[in-house]
Length: 56
Image (spheres, helix red, strand yellow):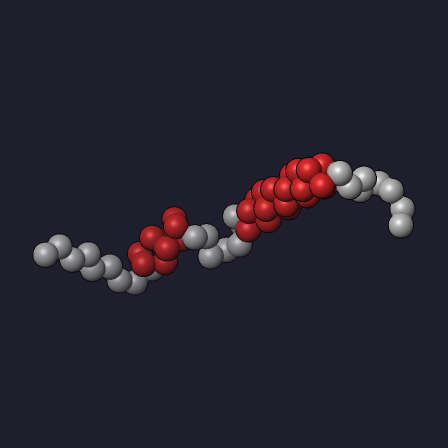
């Protein structure tokens, strides 16, 4: 059985490599999510024949 033991600040560095704790990666992730959602909206509206620019 293999076991990895870390202590002190090392554990935070390992986790930061997986999920940044400082928030610096969040802006890029949010931007990618927003772009993805906009792409999905374009596809859905196009497939449903809805003109997004038309005023109700």
